[in-house]
Length: 376
Image (spheres, one colour):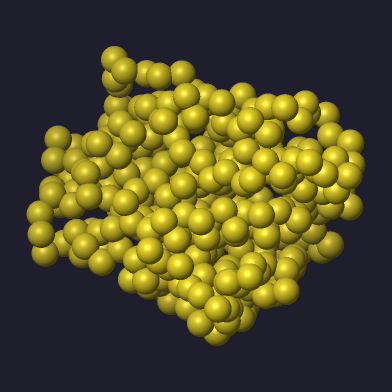
């Protein structure tokens, strides 16, 4: 699916020193991994995949991996205090720790990035079991977030060595989520350009889109954003920073409650957003809503779309067009009590952009939520 809807043709593939095959998995450090995994199965339609913990020889943590199509989430919790996972959760609440990227050669990926200035998180290590071997390495990125490089070409197991298959009697149906479209990072004041430089120099990404405070602003708040993409377009990381406004922006609120920089949201692709959002809403996932007036002149703004306007209006799905097509998108409310992590559901009908035409309506909806929390 990725090669159809999620590809930017590189101008010169020979210069890509870090060829990425996509997102391997996203790992969250959470206060209770068992309950988090249950929530994502129930609310988002993931299936049980694999488990690691004391029963598999891992003494300091428990991890539950769940999967839906090409989308894999891992939830990890500490089993004791005085533990880096427990410290992460105490500081940030539940949040994204690892953005794991699939590579052909994890050793070379580590060498290429660290020699260009990347700070090593994990030197290349081989993990083996009866199903083969996986090589993993990693580097630090913004805040406490880490990029792992996963080489699994010689592995036939269920997920990773150290995990065993997790079978459950409770297997709710999926909701049509396909793969990670992009992951957005929130960084501090004046930190967007240094991190753009990091992705360009350390990982060989290109800045494919930029938005300033004239693009992303309301009467009260603003932010700036640059979209970084790897050579084949499989991995895209927009970077947001706050901008001056009359009141506190959503990025500032995130930084306050996350206690630092981190992953703001993960965008999940679907091929039928109406079906997916209907299923998610029926399972209790809450979404931001824009005013009904957004739809009054929608077709004048974006032109012809294949979808019927009525369900889009009812569900609150946004539409935007670029030179290559259009996209449909909607954003959940934060999925935990801290106003930090949320998810985007996105369906691309040719468009390669990120919904610039929706920014004002979307941010006003976020501000209404901020105001209700007393954080605007």
